[in-house]
Image (cartoon, rainbow, N blue to C red; front, side, top):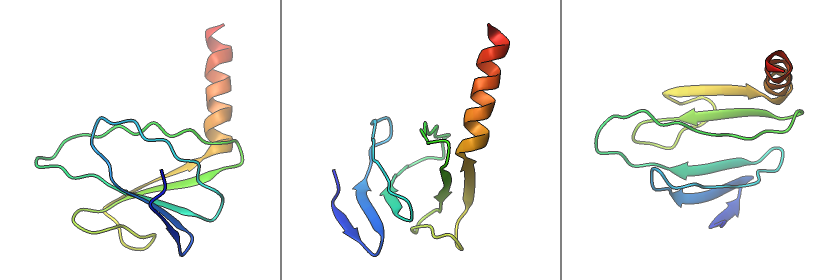
Length: 93
């Protein structure tokens, strides 16, 4: 569900760790959500992308991240990910 859609962003607010969340994100739009943790822990994200997608996943402790202020960033190129997945499946046949 979308709580806000302004300034080219979708804000789904607080997300509970372990809860599955799905959101279609149009090109040029930021999707924001927030995770709260009492103790440091590893978090695994499962992101599905189209072949033409270029996605940046940003995180920041204590404040909302931006493309210039973040603690971590992971850049995903759909063409490379899908090509690698196809190559790995062919190799296992």
